Length: 266
Image 1 (cartoon, rainbow, N blue to C red):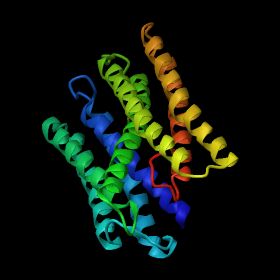
Image 2: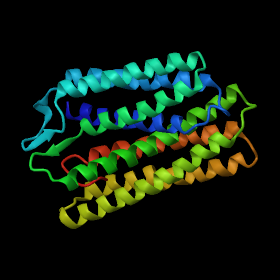
Image 3: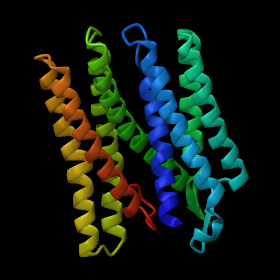
């Protein structure tokens, strides 16, 4: 059950990141079908989240830990995110661009709030704990969401090859910004963990995987995508972004495992 809740954390952050990445993508350069289809993806993520919240009780919590919000409240928030995603998909189906963008920004805020409210804190928590969790959610969600949305948009170019490359390049710069923020947040958390905790050899192995895959490898693949778009070759760029999505997911899921029973974002 504890592992399932960690997966839920990852899924909710992914939903936030994809929502934000789509919200900043210009509908003037991208067809409405892109937004419609991938709002269904976000809806699916939130439906999965609903099932997890409904299933998992507080029994998985270790002694001294508490949820930020009650299970019933969290369930309503996840359901609302799923419903708003569906509504957004319908709006984009009818190509209501302005309303669709408002839905995307509203969904971004709602999914961020849901991800935060699903977090677990020590019973004797301080404001610094809550700030650390918020920074961890934003940085993690931005990384997985921006890279995955760039990959999805790259795939969309295979269907509509005449689209301008500006939106894809814009998302790649968002990936760079997200990875920079994630490096700062995770680097600070890793340093504090090393200073204040007796870390083991196993911990070092997993934290190395987390950094090599989730940060260094991801950034290298994003740079390769930039270079490929100079050709330009969107098909090869999309293939590289598929690889980037995989290594980012490995890095962030490893970070979720490492973060268990640790106060600092990794």
